[in-house]
Length: 327
Image 1 (cartoon, rainbow, N blue to C red):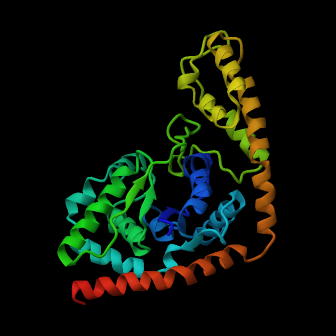
Image 2 (cartoon, rainbow, N blue to C red):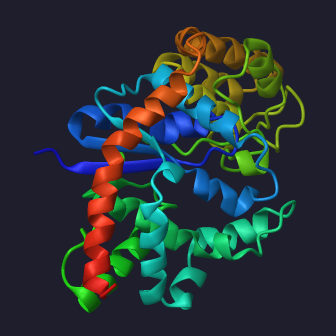
Image 3 (tube, rainbow, N blue to C red):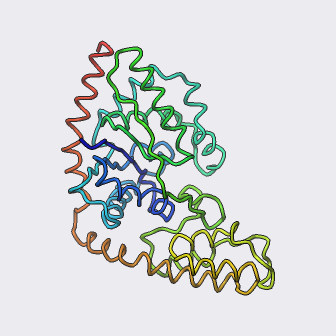
């Protein structure tokens, strides 16, 4: 039998190139290699966006449209919504009973987001507990493995620790998930040079129109040391160059690399080329997405089918854990 894998995204806004190249391409590959489960993490969205939920449903539908337009096939993978599976919250609560607070406090992303995100109140208990919720997401469907990047590895290790402690206390039942390190997942820079993130407001969104994509690319940061066109540049530290490498062939990248180092091209000209090529690259996705969006209710149909598949599995997991705990 195929190993089961799980991936979830928070519906806090539109998907961007960081999602596309960082994980979504691997999700497409895994839907054939694994018994793949992909969920819209709307409870997780509340941990940081609890004050602004007016677009939660829209972002959820948009995410499903993006996924399917990109190539995820509901007939070959399971797509569902986290809040449609209430058992995940009960399992999280059971996990909090065996999880020391110090384990949650040391999560790197918890510290990073507290420092980086200053326009929202992150002093809520839900944000503090999200690693336990993540552990429940993974174990509720008894996932064997989870794809992780280097910045997410501590999350999965915490899940493994929670599972080990639960099993060690109540009995060996839950699966201790292992990590899958994607071979070609890319760390995509944003317009300001930091990692592309919705939280940082530095993203190129895959569903944006060509005009919107062009406007964003034209505002991209380049080599900060290159003040004039006649100054030699360093493509290795240029965020725009890193984006171009994701969509162009090696010969073209090598040409731009050489011209940049020799000050034979300007950054504005390079931005125009990247914008044009990126719009062409995303054109098939945009066409497919428009077709899906014309089918009213398509996203909800996909999520309902996923719920019907996941719900019995989740109930079996939680009912077993209840008995083991003594409830």
